[in-house]
Image 1 (cartoon, rainbow, N blue to C red):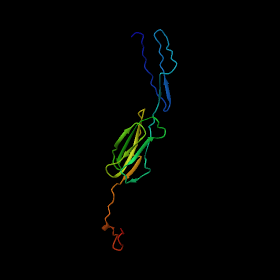
Image 2: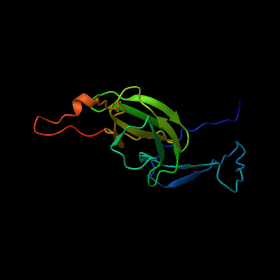
Image 3: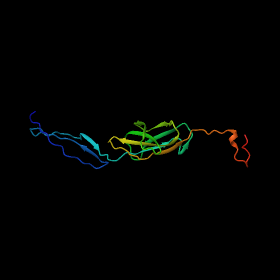
Image 4: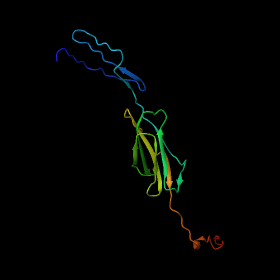
Length: 167
């Protein structure tokens, strides 16, 4: 290839939240300048971690005897470029989180743990720039207690000074 010259690209640094436009203009060996009216590409600098919000559709429950609850999630404030949501849970006190799934949009999920206990549930996100949300604790803490108490008539005596509860 004769007449082809290459040059090193300059190092670019940008300010978070700004959009930059780039164009290349070439000159051939005869000195002819390429005529170009617009830019070749544009790039927005995104250095901020995305945020998400997770809640229970049933409301602000702390305890439930239901089989499960509906978890809902959406982007947090100023987080419009989310690529994916990671929904996770753990028993309160455990260090590791278990995956419920990864999703590409706002949504909901039926959470019905196999065993009763107190659970933390959280959403974490990643955006198109590769920034990720990090949460140390759950967005929701809920206790499942689905064991129904049993009561027999013989155990309804309160003590010797009281009569038994009528049935």
